[in-house]
Length: 584
Image 1: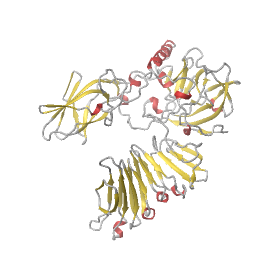
Image 2: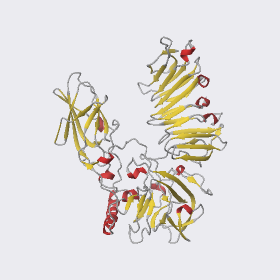
Image 3: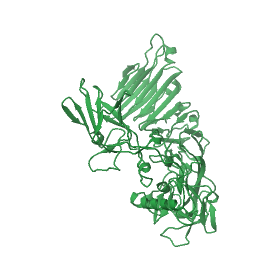
Image 4: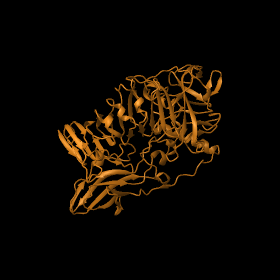
């Protein structure tokens, strides 16, 4: 058994270790250890938290244990005093709790990042009062296998549960069945109650549970890169039924609605098998299509009588044109179809038929709900006909193809826009302020800013001081969907398009190609929107560029070949790119 003292301990080999603090002048002793794999091979370590004979010192100790990628760490407690604080970082690796920690540690903080896993089933009561943080890259909190149930989680604080994160739980040693879910959009919390009256609260942007689930609950934030995709009608939308048009909020499970699929005879009806609703609160700091603003389609926007009144739907909701579905966000022209920014919170509804269907809403052909895995975001009222199902997809289950290609959508966009101008619809907002200057510069690891020395013929030159082996390429960003038009289904934040990079030191010119590698560093986009066929890649406005080993005394000259960039929406420069987005 190896003993580890104090802070700064590094473990790279499998084995058992004792971790103990060092007291200095009888004041606060702490200890930490990081378990990592230098070769990529699995490292399996057991770390025993051990105290000192000086109990007043040990009682104030803080133990920090980190498990990095390709490591599995079991943490247990030996002779430590009440009052010990323990911080467990599952940073790509797996941490499990062993015996003793339950009675030893007063404060336990668990940080899950980069896909790390925490297994707490053996001593789940250690989590009573614990703080559990889902951080960058997320992870898995695995509580399945506990015989004590969820009651002991009542004092735990679970924060920042979001896209890609998982919580696996049982209830009283048997499969956990959810009986109710309550989402508080103001506080950003979700209260989950199980059939045995156990409950747990998650803090985050989403309601992440499936009320129809059985077996273990794998509470995953089902969403795309831009957040939870919500496809619905707002209240007041009139749905065509055999007995006339009925407001969507008044429809119930079992009600019949008219169907307009090309594959079924005229007059076909289908019954509603699921009806859900949810409340949205707009987040105005995000781009309009991701902030949650509803889209207003004015009366007669498409043609006379279509729609027959103003129609309000969510941005991802699809309209039916020429045998295909098109998301309404791709048709926003700012005149007859626009984001209604006077509405900052609202209730929205969906109705589902046994098969995805083309339906009539406000005189406009639209879609019923297609469950692609986000049913958990809604509250169900009334009878339940559909009890669980596998998520569906557009390729196999849609009533018509989803069209997001520019060749199909752009002519449609212009046709509707020309009608809006001819009808006298004025722009609903001022045009955005755009800038062609990328504000291209570099930032070092220490935060130093390096400005361009000169720019010529599509090349930007920077002086790089000795010793700097990594920089970030910083610039403004723009989204093709904003700067070209919403009919371009590319909502990435693009900085500049870089082809070749060279670093000159003395009389040596060295190519830098990491940005073109399949596993490019952070901040480089893959594919799409390439004006040339030669290898090149877009930055996201803050792309990491390793420069390799540098000469210790020579200044370097870095040359970036920039082949495209901009224009940029200056008003949106400060939108944080890592913000979890709600698409509603």
